[in-house]
Structures are given as C-alpha cells and as structure tokens.
Image (cartoon, rainbow, N blue to C red):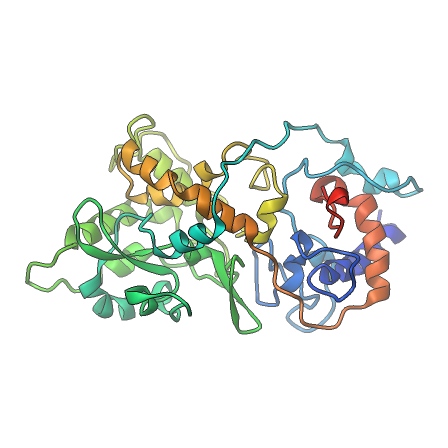
Length: 381
C-alpha cells in the first residue's frame, strides 16, 4: 500500500538528494547522496537518472529515490521519531547488526592520485610503439581524450590507459587503468570517481585486440599484448553485456578467480572451479561513497582491508604472489585518494522547501542504512 509518506519520499527526498550535491545551504554535506549530480543516462549507483527526469522530461522521483543503494547495510543507526507510517517505512532498521569497520591502512592521497594515473598495476598491455595503430581499432575502449595534467607519454593517451614499463619484460606498454570504469561525464565534464554510466561492454576488448595488425618485425612488448588478448579471450563471455550502461565487474572477478590457483595465483587456461553461464551485471558506484562505507558493496562484502578488493581487476595478468604484493604495497595510497574524493557540486536549482521535507523523511526512514549527511562531524554516521 502506498501511503502519503511514500509519495513524499519520491519528491521530497529527491530534493534533499540534490541539496546534498552543493546547495549553498549548510544543512547537508556534499557526500553520499550527492550522487544525484549525474544527468547522464545511467544504470550506475551514482547516476541512476537522479537528475529527476525520465527520457521524456517527466519527473521520476521513485527511481531517483534509489540513489545510494551501494551503501553498506549497517551504515547508521536509526534516527527520527515514531509515526503512523513507521511500520511501513522503518523496515531497514529491523536488520541484523554487522561487525564494525576494519581499520584501513593509512595512505597519502596525493601519492595515490599519482599511482592511479601512472603505475602499471595492470601488468599486460599493448606495446607503446604499436598503440597509435591499435587505438582506432579498439572502439569505445580507446576513444576518450587525454586527461589534463598528466605528464610525459601519459599526456598523449586516452585517460583510461597508462603508459608504463613492464616489470616482467622491460618493454614500454600501454594498459587499461581504473578510470576505464571509474570516470564519467556529467554535463560534458569528465569527473574522476563518477562511474561511467554509458560504458559500452556489449563487445569485449579481446575481439578488438585480435584485429590489431602485427608488424613482421621484432617489437618489444608483443608478448604482453598476446598475454592480454589470450586472457580476455578466456574470460570474454563473462565481460560481454547485453545492454549499454551495465558493468561486468562481478563477472570478470568470478572468471578471473576461476582461472587462478588460489594459493600461487598461477594462471590456468581451463577453469579450476565451475562457473554458471551468466553473472548479473552491476552498477559502478561513485568513489565519494567510499568514505561512508564499512563494506564496499551493496551485498555488504569487502568489510576487511579494502585494498584486497580494489586491486582485483589487476589479476588479469598478475601471475604470482610477489607480483600481487608489489601492487598491494602502494594501493593504500590509491585507497586514500579514493576516500578523499568529494562529489561535484550540483549546478542546477533546488527546491529548498522540498529539501526540508526530504531531510526529515530521509533521517527517519533511510538513514538507518544510508547514514547521515551532516556538516557537523559529530552528527555523521
């Protein structure tokens, strides 16, 4: 049964959501619910049409009220008073308490930003000398512009690729980096930490790699590209989506796990554990949610050292424990940078009256899972 409070939540809570994105008011901080800032077509947690309009321009508050669903389930204690609709709306407070947050390794956010854009944590890739030929053949995987502020050869490649020297072969190669999924556009501006809501994974990069012509000359790094192509061919079915905007991260993680020895990380072309035919796709959560979370994902997992999950995509070509430990050693800095990312300011008008109503409704009915958003640190959860 839809009560008056349900209807209010689809409008007033949206207004609160937008207020948290950068209204000049000092009522709400610019953190988790500021995911409403995205207006791009999206299935991501931070950009799920939270602009408040459907494709035909009509209000769609019900879908917008779902923003922030990636938050960990034990994010806060319930706040607010009772009322006739409490039995309907306070179900989230009836869950089970989970252990508190694990202590995270301290890190340097500035060093983390540098590592994010310059370190070769994906250890296979395309020879740099071959990349100008390969780039037009890689489709949506290489059609982005360079990121302003990068230096050297990294200033010449798309923002989701990194030029680095392979530690195994010594060749200069170009590899995908975290921004392949974790950078997106809002209102024409590239925002690091915003999930790429319109990413097209209906084709796999493995198919594109096979189209790259190999020159009949010795070329350092070809073995790294061959390794990359072979791995993507093996896991490709789990990274191919049915629709634009869905992300294959969980499918990739499952496939990579199935092809690794759990003790040595040695690669196996044949799966070592049985996988189903399909892994449900996911949304890419915005990085500014990270500071709010005990568990990184919507199912509550990743409640220990967050680095262990953050480096998972690097296992495409990481073939030994020492190699993984080397990458792990600086991911405390990358995690510190991710935790420092703030949401962009929402640039459009906000209905202050609806935001006031939404704040009360959110605190009473949502904060038990999604946390509070207060300028006073003592009131944060």
